[in-house]
Image (cartoon, rainbow, N blue to C red; front, top):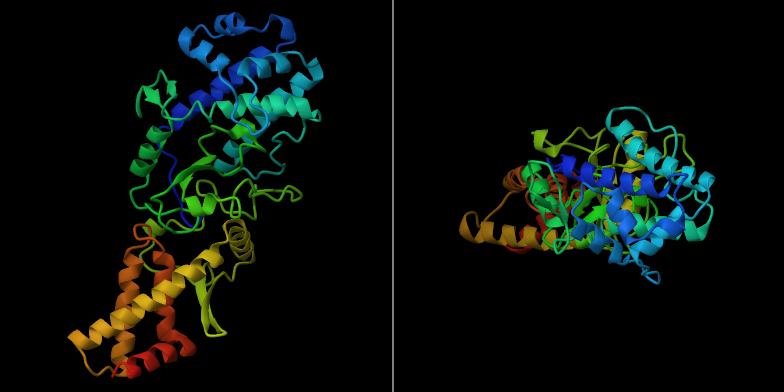
Length: 380
């Protein structure tokens, strides 16, 4: 969430899938529907606007939840068989979570938490609802399945690879991971609010964003929800790439004011460590939460060690090719040049935010400059 990103133009295709989920739930949660009448033919009859072949294939598929793997028609029958109050809870939770993200997008504070499965007290019902709704994403959203969406725009046959391409078109200035600023060459489409806990958002356009493999690992973001559900606004203390980003770096000519955001560095036990800081208490809390979520400073520490070696190599090359003798002013000037070069790469080059701040800090932080100066002298 270091970057503001734009929702791709295929948003309406995802909205179509969300509405399809709504149709399935509405049919199954109708007060007149029981488990006994729900079979493949019944589902086909309820969805005359869909290709029969697709509906039958969907019904025969199984969920991809570990240790569950129930056929979709079984999940549908189970949902149809619960009592009316439980059906109302399912529908209310679905509509509540869908609307909450839209409210935040429109600038209305979220004075209530996402429900997810929390309002569904029965574990078996939770399993059935999750199994059905997650399947709209995995495997149905994958390229070997997909949806024939009757809308113009992105594509007739819509799937995750199309979403990725449309995301890139909508965000030409952000080719790095929007969460950590790292490379996105092994990207995964992430659910900001994990589908295992919030299956009603499994295909929501404001809940899907391409991020790097490193951020999506189980020991990083994994299935951890970026929420404080005990707060009046559970989303307030968390950054969100669509709804509450740190910055629109593409619109930022220079590094932002330090009271908004900065990266600072400390020398501890012969190591240089990065820290994300802000003088704004709310942003500082958001940065702390982001760091805890994706282990950002842990990863940046590894990158910084490589950056320092790169900087030393640049100094060696500069001395050998252009300036055998470097005084402090010339070194500071060169560091400033390198910092500006890195800043121009923000959003395009991996870890350019970290690089920009580090090269800038080496001019201003005495301990960092001294280390570089001594290295430069040693190269004489």
